[in-house]
Length: 340
Ligand code: RBF
Image 1 (cartoon, rainbow, N blue to C red):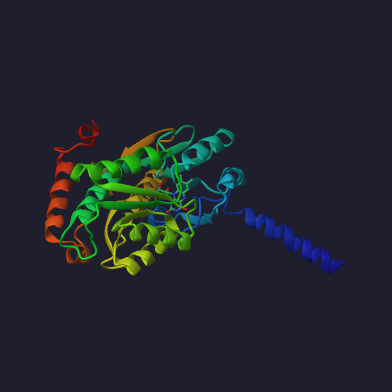
Image 2 (cartoon, rainbow, N blue to C red):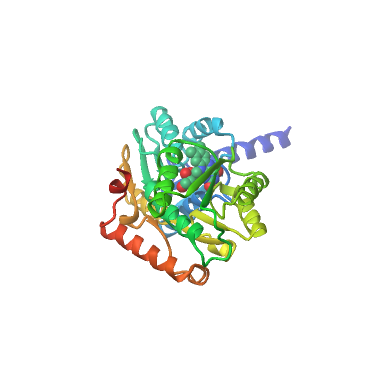
């Protein structure tokens, strides 16, 4: 009997203690990073997590990273549950589908702050949304892909003017920004270049991605842009096998397969995560609004300083890319004018 009393006493104490650390009980702020998928292998999610942790470490904020998994239909309920716990002062997440899901959740929990990185632009409620100019980002790497497939100097570049793209799934930003941006990049160099666009149907199946890529390479494609999260590794395997090339998106991927991953069009999501988390920590986060950032703010870029880029990319392509980036940054080349 006494033992039971003792055990229930411990239980009560445990429950009381576990509720400590909630925002009502002490001053330490806390952030939940909600990963809609899994962290490993997804460039934008890894950058979100590292950027938030960096800001939090500097400001003495606690961070808990929660992986939401690949069942997209469950993300809304998971966020509702997270907000209802009232344990986290800020919930941070990333991908264009999350803006709407967070705005919905915020209708039930208007006191809960949300930050969506790589969002859709459709912010509202207590949600702050950072949107990258993916059209610009895809245009740059499309331009580079066109130079690669046209090259006579690159060993793995064949005579066919065929470029591939493999993506995890289709969604508005993919179909309206990334795909058209990539196509405009290709066409600007040479309107005869053909694009083979393939959809994997998920963000993790590396074996299926390898098969899709192998099929494209066998078909005369010599360079593939992959935007497939953890499945990107399969595209690298197929490229190595075929002696062909891969282009990376969001993070710098050259060192994952030197000489195979030739270049990357990046978003500085790690920096954005850090900057916006600091804004929030200082009480300066504006919610209910979206902010679009691109090459001119330094949040979209095409890194060329790496040793691997200099070593594996022919000099004439390096020069053309330097000119392109320079013209985009100084405003003498705008995507709007190419669109017409
Ligand atoms: N990108 C990843 O790297 N891994 C993912 O698991 C992933 N899941 C996504 C789920 C949805 C519903 C959407 C709309 C996008 C997803 N993305 C994922 C793509 C990512 O957010 C971003 O759009 C691309 O990386 C291009 O910048």
